[in-house]
Length: 208
Ligand code: PRP
Ligand code: URA
Image 1 (cartoon, rainbow, N blue to C red):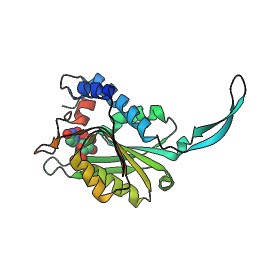
Image 2: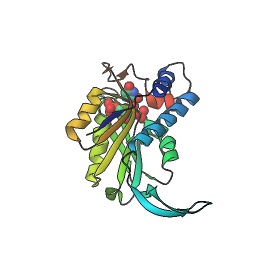
Image 3: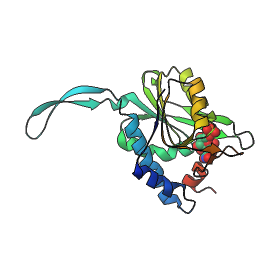
Image 4: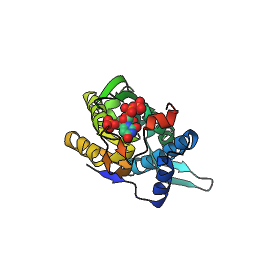
């Protein structure tokens, strides 16, 4: 299992703005999308290319292209939707599925309310997107649901994560690689990530 934490001064800079409670909805959305593009770029470092022959304005050449149809992005609703346009910018012809989950406010356990994925998903690479990996409960359940559909290749992209969340994915799904912009220190008593950025869904949609 690979855990890739983006380690770059620009990411630290962008995260500082994202985390700041004074940052408004517009800028928050733009940054979530931008960081999602960068995570996606990292996650596709191992992408297999197909040889093609093209013609430049000067001459023919043999080169390689990505089979974009091989990829399926799956946002975990709601907050995962905030990352979708960022990843689609990188792989515009990828397919998209949706998994609806919310954490019960008292128990912090995930409740699944929606599941819709493209046909033929078991032969595709699935990239789950969700800005927050806190306890890991939502991620583990989403991966369970996808594996039940026969999916064999899964990656998980998140902006802020915790060691606890990563360890919980590792325990059950050590074949899933994780790409995260930052691993934060801890969870508080309400299972929110600290220092974190607050409730990602509420900040993206301006619901609180
Ligand atoms: C957030 C977040 C993850 C989940 C992470 O969603 O977007 O899906 O919590 O927590 P976990 O790792 O402890 O499961 P939330 O339940 O707040 O729903 P929302 O996206 O609808 O706001
Ligand atoms: N979900 C969020 O949006 N933020 C957290 O810190 C934890 C779960």
